[in-house]
Image (tube, rainbow, N blue to C red; front, side, top):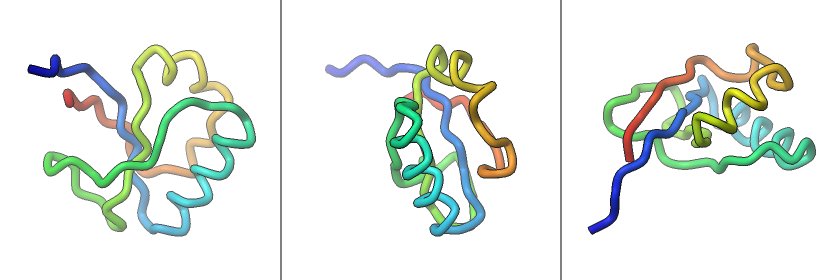
Amino acid sequence: MRRKRQYIVLSFASTARAMGWEKECAARGIPGRLIPLPSEITAGCGLGWRMLPEDWQACQSQLNNAGYDAATPVEQ
């Protein structure tokens, strides 16, 4: 059985913002990936950016807070 891990999931108001976020993170080398939002999170577009908490803390100063709506810890 797979062990669950803690992640930070960023939610977005629109698909365009989520796709722009993915492009920006790829260009800057910020780890993570787009995922369908887990059921415990509701957002406008249904997509989220998942990353490990340690990556979130290390990269938070590089990230544009206006690019995402909320950062939520989730166990998956």
